[in-house]
Image (cartoon, rainbow, N blue to C red; front, side):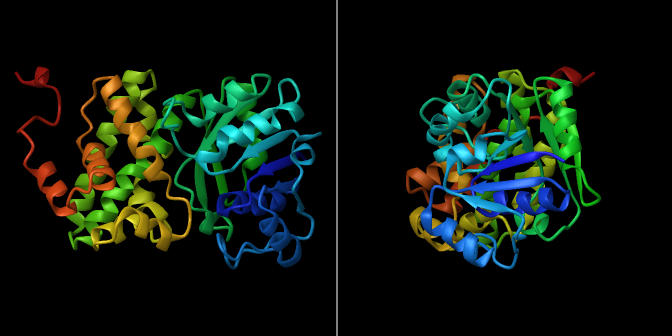
Length: 336
């Protein structure tokens, strides 16, 4: 049995709280939003983020960062990416040397181009910072639907400890040393999902979506490998696996926002209608900046940025992708 703190009471935080409580662990949840704390304390349910998933009475709810961090074997960082830096800064004083922090958020900071684990490590240098990611919608994890993820850590010992804590008959965990690759895949797949949603909104079909998924993972993989990640990661759970589920699922807020944009709504109108954080919007600019920094061609991410921030017409953006210069799918070196 482990003592676990969860920073963030949104859908993913709640889904993991249910999983870990069912695994027999002691779970404490924290939120900076007073109304959220009151709602979960009184109703045991977040009717905004994850309606229908109830929290057991054994799960504690608090508004104290000290409480959620102190005497915990693991602290899970489940806040939206734009709040990661400030939350990490505020909690640092309560984190002991070597305490494990598991980042489950997905994003890249636009200003610094740092991954979320990099930000947490910078703000809490005494922590053992890890990442958990994969095709894992909170709506399904909270209902006990079989799910598989991967944990990335600096040491095998830490990865296997997290694996043991999270594993159950409905939640399988693999281990990996490639924290960077897991973070890049988990963040940029949200941008590709926006493109997939836009294609759906325009009325395009499965052929289009398959092209976006396969060429999208090619873009992400090229960038990740250039940054120092392992190519194999992008064929795995936090790469292709997460990309498929985010581009195809009705649960995906990024695909939903893209769909609304494809239907003619502005970015702000789409985000307001989704009424949850659309991480792909925040990662899109960072993805484009990284592509330029590392001199990697990322045409899908480039066109998504044009639609989001330059008022480009969605259909024109698709035409731009289709009419790009002719090229080969694999290296010309393979010709005989």
